[in-house]
Length: 379
Image (cartoon, rainbow, N blue to C red):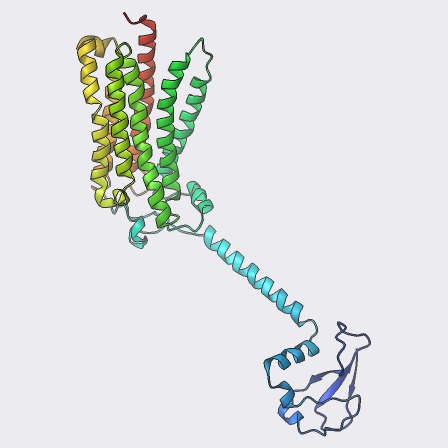
């Protein structure tokens, strides 16, 4: 474009002529731009300018709308420039948020919000609250206080899914449908417990609401595990005694339902009720002592322990109770705070013992099923 100066040594503005219409503005005045001389002084210029001259007075620029018009006149590309700057700003904020997500660091117990403070003997290596579920699941691959808890039950869950698939897909000439139903109940209890536990330990740092919700599901999973563990051995233990089998099965379902209801109590997941939680589940498990004593009376002490796989079930119970004791007393970290923050703390030991007990229980009920099915029909 060509620029011509207005004649005179004290000119306050210059006229800008375009060879082509800039943006088809269809303005009634030529396009001009102001020098550094103030607009106030421009209003003192001679009002009788030629048709190729135009002076903006202060009155014409007294409001925001006129200022915007002038900006658009002087800089036709201003709107697109603003949009570009806004886009760059949004992209910068996006990268900053992305960087914050990817660079979170483990923190001290005292830096956690109150709803995440569960075990004050684990001092360092805690995850902070994370903003999204995807961040929570990506944290599985980093080292922190929950790494062991997550992976123990995640791998256990996957393993039992594989075992269940193998057992339940056997042809009927190998495993009859009644046995498949009984073992399916056991597998459902184990997989539900391990799966709920894995998910809870992964996502509980998302928010307080999510933490409370999945802690309830975690405790319900433990109740389902106990119910699923009772059913197979009651079925095979009282294989030829329908009435006791029915009574004890109903009793287990009632106690299991009561345990689930207690687990849904909001305060049940609070740290101060840790011993109560352990006590509720241990009491539910020990209720199996009643049918166990009945079974010993029917079968006899010697055959039960030396010719039947009942001893495996007793070992299973010992492992579950031992794990609950470690969990309730928070051993060994209570004797060496800060030394078991990442590995070998009480909750990880509890998880390992639960998996071991489930494996032993599976072996025990398998041996019991073989013993019952090979000993002939009931007489």
